[in-house]
Image 1 (spheres, rainbow, N blue to C red):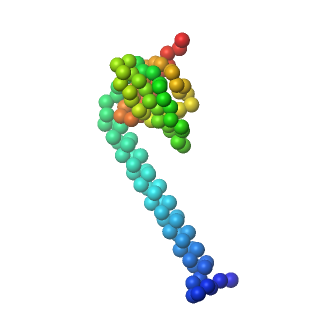
Image 2 (image 1 turned 120 degrees about the vertical axis):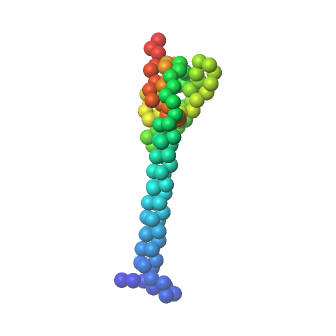
Length: 111
């Protein structure tokens, strides 16, 4: 049963609207994937660095990663992406190894 209002078919209009939404979602998903691949490629061209550091800030989690801020022994502050943020606690100190904008590993000093 189709309902026509002023010459417009509501089911056909809804189908077109849903198709547009699905198309936009797919487009956004593809763009997100391209951006993530670009980040990964950019990170892999950077040198791997290791330095003693302390975690001073941890942003709220977003999906599978979170942003963290470390302060190195020299006073430099580095904002990085962490894949396992639950293992990090503000105030943790240890050896930080990172490449580009991602943490490779963090070996916490046990007190």
